[in-house]
Image: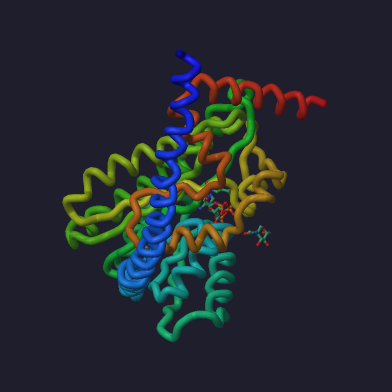
Length: 348
Ligand SMILES: NC(=O)c1ccc[n+]([C@@H]2O[C@H](COP(=O)([O-])OP(=O)(O)OC[C@H]3O[C@@H](n4cnc5c(N)ncnc54)[C@H](OP(=O)(O)O)[C@@H]3O)[C@@H](O)[C@H]2O)c1
Ligand SMILES: *[C@@H]1O[C@H](CO)[C@@H](O)[C@H](O)[C@H]1NC(C)=O
């Protein structure tokens, strides 16, 4: 009984399925053809116009953005500290080419003159560029900073954009470093720039217009061993300008903090060591970093677009910043390992 029932059910099932299957195959073929036609209709009437439309809108948006940036920078009075070398010098070239009225600052008047000379021979700029002014002062000497701010306001009337770029790096262990060295780094990288900022701020508030830029560092977000004074000064910079941004938004003043990773400049050569002497070594990471001209273009567009903050770094430093915030204990372990490794390499 069981066998008969099962043997009967098999052919019955087959008989039922065959016509149903062939019916399904025909209709599926038809359906596919119809679908294909509909899809092509859809592609030509919706997707392609949408694609070109959005590309057009994107292009238009970029064009408007570029035009707005151009008018923002043209004729703007831009003060750049540390304009004698590295990133500051490249920023001078980029903002000069954009038609800004520059005030170039540094400690060495001769070097500043050389930069002005170099700018005047630049050929890739537009017609309406301006000859830069130069102001010589030492950021670690507050009195000269205040005099410089006064001089700038006297000659140019106002400042549209202040770029706090000058800085000095540090190499050494905490235990061996004299407090005078910590203070020197802090004076140059933190107190000098904030003194200049505070001296120019009232006139910006009065005009309800202005833009303050701080060139910080990835080390304003994470701390690497043997860079204590530098990392501390950059963390302080980040904190100060974040507070400032919130306070001056009501006066339509913008604050941009830029945090580069390694840049190919003389920063490590010019770094101070534990005893205050010049480090004088070009670090491998610095030598393999981004070019100062590349970073200057990032600064130009970040300022032009009034960005609040920009991290200009590759994948590893960017990940390190996330690691520090999300998984601090992993970050601390990695830094301790790095410290041991560096100490061993130095001792051997
Ligand atoms: N290079 C990097 O890997 C890197 C990475 C992240 C952030 N940054 C930051 O980028 C900025 C520019 O540095 P850089 O790499 O271009 O180094 P750099 O080539 O050594 O230039 C430093 C500039 O700062 C000026 N400066 C130093 N001490 C000063 C003082 N006491 N008073 C006035 N000016 C002073 C120097 O001018 P004079 O010596 O002619 O006076 C020079 O123009 C710094 O804030 C630095 O922290 C650099
Ligand atoms: C580094 O210093 C040397 C000597 O002062 C100078 O010629 C060179 O232009 C500097 N490099 C950068 C990237 O500023």
